[in-house]
Amino acid sequence: MRAIQVTRFGGPEVLELVDLPAPDPIPGLEVLEVDAAGVNYADTHAVENSYLSAQELPFVPGAEVVGRTIDGRRLCGFTASGSGGYAERALVAPTAAFEVPDGVSDAAALGLLVQGLTAWHLLRTSARMVPGESVVVHAAAGGVGSLAIQLAKLWGAGRVIAVASSEEKRQLALDLGADVAIDSAPADLTAALREANGGKRVDIVLEMVGGATTDASLRALAPFGRLVVYGMASREAATPIPPTSLMIGSHSVIGFWLVDCMKVDPVGMVGAPLADLVRLVATGELRPLPGTAYPIEDARRAHEDMRARRTTGKVTLTTR
Image 1 (cartoon, helix red, strand yellow):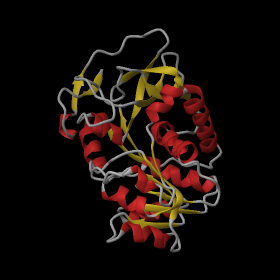
Image 2 (cartoon, helix red, strand yellow):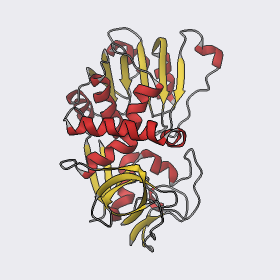
Image 3 (cartoon, one colour):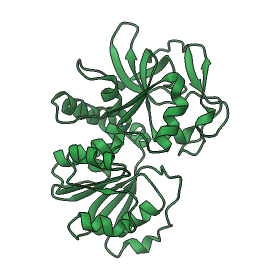
């Protein structure tokens, strides 16, 4: 089978198209003929071994796939340990997969796994958003951001402030329901966030950029505000935060990693939210954005575009 393999750590240049043996069936796991694999920021960290969990060479990247089982069922799910998604076949655990309803595209189905579950938990589990609160969404046109905007509005956010790097992306965020959209690189991001919230500090910030963006977002928080960190796309660390500094304003800085949901409670923290997300898509209340689909041989370009912030919505690699 064709697959993308990493034999040395580095940037997008280490993604190599090779021919590998197809995975053998294993009791308790499904063999999937992969139609498409999801591409995530976490994958760009994995190939340079800068992610939260260390990688072992060689490996096939990719944690999510959609395709057909041997008996013809269309499944979307997380790949099993040791089976990467950037390949024509992969192994998935039935407990970490769902049957894709008719009318739901590959990109939409994949958008519900890493990005959909992350957006759901950022708002529900980590930030514990209540109706009427203001929510800032950085990288608002991305896979997580575009879904977080819609979920925040569905769940009664008082004001959703989208942050994005281009006019096109800001307009997309507004079309998805954001109340206001601002540039991601103003002279003073803290002031821009407060201005976008009618001069008031903000209740919740969903942050995955890192560095100065994290610093500015923390300074924009209202009393009892929550900054939820779920990535570091810029590869820049934020300024260290003395715990006692959080006491003034009663601020919270919360980390989120989807892997922990799978470790703690796969049914309650993965299965139940997924069912909620699938229902919202089926009823038309939630619209995962179909980002660019790259053929598997262009995996390097997909990573280059994602790292350069040229992508929107759900980025996928197709095998057919």
